[in-house]
Image (cartoon, rainbow over all chains, first blue to last red; front, side, top):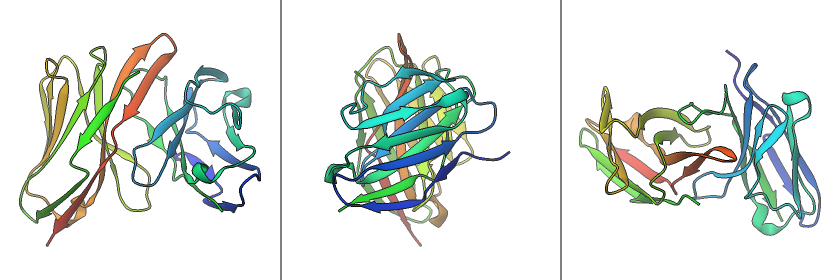
Length: 115
Length: 114
């Protein structure tokens, strides 16, 4: 089966610029997650979608981060304006139904460097 | 919210020896505990998981144990091989009002020396 697709693979921007990441989950997966992984740390959940609705965005810095999942399939995560501390790998993951014991399928991530 | 602590942060073992990684969690309502392996530059992948109604689970050279009373769980890798070198993340999942939420530990970098 095709995996979770993410683009771009790498992105370098200057602080205060804007950036957007794209994710295409595994076909049929209802739940989509965006995680932020700072170097040397575990992934931190930013936002979780169930179909096209937001289930959890409690750790999303809403003053600068936004995300959408139109039509319950693809998703985009945007940062505007970016700060130095946003440098991280942004991982997208999906799972079939979002149940507690479901395996998460991760994409390869987008490595963001903010200079 | 849930907090997951993972130790050690780095672990170096000789090929053939065992490796043990320990995690503690804070929320007693957590009921699912997966372990993910992330090789350098690659995506995290699930290697084993355990539910709260089970005390131990084994899959070939990998085993996980869970102590609900103490709120800690551990990953055991026996007969380590160079391909086991990676970063391992534990996680705890809880079903809340806003849906299921998976919280990861900080990771353990395992180096298997040949």
